[in-house]
Length: 168
Image (cartoon, rainbow, N blue to C red; front, side):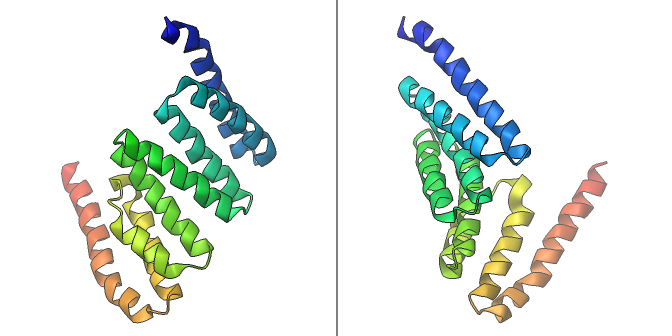
């Protein structure tokens, strides 16, 4: 019976979340943040870890675009914890990628490297993760290590491209 009573809240949370993404794409970050606050309130009332995690993930993106990197990291860590709770490895991988990038932006290249190296990145984000790792290595002052990784990374990309052509 509780589930039936809570269903309108679930729909409202999803609507606020969707509208916040529209606002984010229009670069109206304040409106996006306001809708995310409403969505989070509803998702927490539902006691739904997946909905809460999604809201925190999007709140992290909005905070990042507003230049609030510490807040973005905090939201990303909260989303990561929720996604770990429900064992969503794909979402955790995306968040680790974002957390590595945020560490890089916060001037912590060693932390960025550590986070990015522990990440099992989803296939769709592997190229971005490799580039972030290289940038973090360079920023950390280990340009030689970054340079040494380039040939293998280029070969991996070429292999993926070759595999795609062969699959056609």
